[in-house]
Length: 86
Image (cartoon, rainbow, N blue to C red; front, side):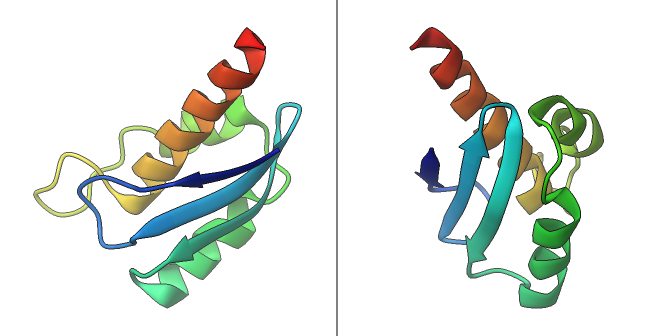
């Protein structure tokens, strides 16, 4: 299933990804640091929700309490929880 999320406290205006069971595909950020976010998108391709959660959740950007990768992890975890409730 495809998800579109508005990240909070970071530069990108939108975050999109697909969740196929427990596996993440096609992560895309709209806005933000293009090169870094392309790298993050490629690195998480095909990883499970738990793998992304353990690698990215809690990463901070500068003095912020979050980061683009943290927002991605949060969104993916929330989407997985939403799918489990169906």
